[in-house]
Image (cartoon, rainbow, N blue to C red; front, side):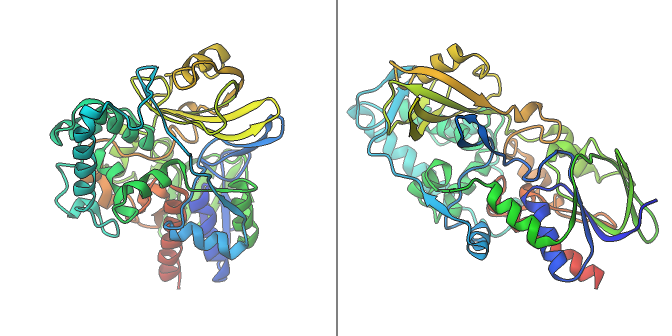
Length: 431
């Protein structure tokens, strides 16, 4: 039996690292155990794929309105850069690139106006600083497609909005909760443009998300053990024992920060509450893919949304000697075979018909046993059923992770928010 610490933090993503930093600053002894061979969780900055150009395989963008991550960026002097706003948009209707200014013919502009009004009206109903499940929003906690139908959306505007919601959630139209995506517009002051910025036009880390993860880890002073998957957590009368592949650790308290779909694969004694176990078994709806492509013969300012397309978004990030670096998203994990350059090229050509893809890269987050999905997007109905239970401690075991945040679940900001909340919670009971 290993010597005891005040807190064992399970998971070295932004939630776990933030909590460890705050606990360490208060004089508590902390051990962080991480199953992967790296810190950062569902962020992963790689410079070994496109001739040294840094690729974010997971979480990427932040916006100033995300105050928790912005505070940490300022605290550590982490350089970030505003994304360059596109001078034009490319619209792809089932693979046909439109030559219209707006995503539809002039006769459908009324449909587009109606869609924007419906979006703003729904967003105005949300108070994102309070539990959504307390606000009578069950009619919005439905699938993306069901919400679009109930809102009376029509034409290309309907198809665009469904595709956009799917892109935001990296979830399919029949699984993702519209309420979870509507939270984005509400969190941006109920601004449609703000919602676009939070999606793909915010700030990026000059030296990758890893720069902030490293700063948090170094500042924490905590022992961080990598390659240490936790298999079970057993509560005793005055302590918790955490079992991992290399042994056991005892602590006064444990903080679990793993993704929703991973919790069910840890054996808890006593068992998890029925609500936490149920949502972990269901998992969340963020089951799509993020693919990087290096392509020639594409516009250097390409920014394209599509419906009925393989990728729902394709955007240019940087121009290199060998081509333009494109970031591409799809709401299902098997829409595009990222190992097949020809298939990636087929998908990119729905936005840039002359594209020649020369390289592609991805990480299959859905198949990653320590993630079991991309960023958290709740399934239709999950907010109403489970939101109140996600952050509730169970005996000596506490919970954090972006999915427990009110304002920005699924984002780096939500993870940091949850880590700070959990650390304060632990410090109170450890006093």
